[in-house]
Length: 337
Image 1 (cartoon, rainbow, N blue to C red):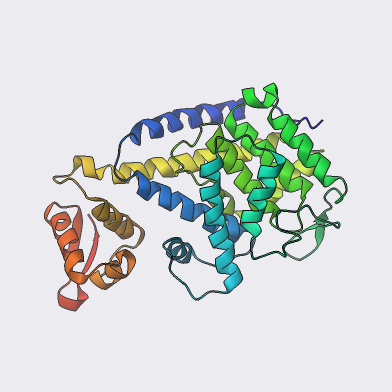
Image 2: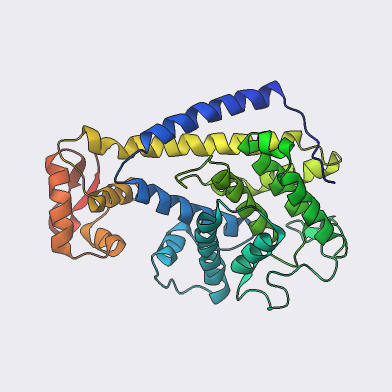
């Protein structure tokens, strides 16, 4: 049976302590707030963008957000479908997060991720021939287990996941272990990376670590793809000793939580301001945070509202000092105070 090899280092313990403190702060800060859906939408779009970008999808985060809203972005159909499938996979994870992770569930998740991208005989089905992991120069750097061995190795991983050892581990460690093991087994003809990262997210959902679904660990991985692949391969080169890989994942989760905390602090402006912000005004402030010096036309496009409605939303923010109006007439633009 599969049994992961790793060491709990003082550095990892410090990371886990910081993670636990930050997570507790975030849990308290997101109780009964109107802008929670905003955080969730942002996290879903960032996760879909990052996980697909890691494997070469060229769509920008702006385009992914547009796809999440149901808009067409004029990109290659496979690139759009890859993102659409990942967004569907996140919904699937939320729906099934309390379910036990079984082989059939894992195959179903792969089918969601690969629908329309792989032939039916490969979508949600184990690989039928040997595959390889290549680097950016298309040089073979890793040979996964054979197609014959893969199904049994997946079964053994899922058996370990249901053991007392796995259940007693911190969710961050379990997330890291299953991510590395599944992507190393590489049991499908394509989509192994996306599936492994989605499985890691599933663990964080299921174990109650990300109860609000507002974390995007994949954004950390995508920010330094070279380091991500280096750490994956480093563990393989060390005879599958996962110590450094687990530390890397923990670093990523800590980085993610710090980003979420900052985002929450930005959104908490509503409780300190002279007005009670509406969800639309919160969206408007978020857009101005991401796109400083924006004109009304840009806000219209982002929010799909008329010029008159934009003015109704933004003028109270200007009057209250949350937003600064600059320029005149057609040159008027807005930025956060």
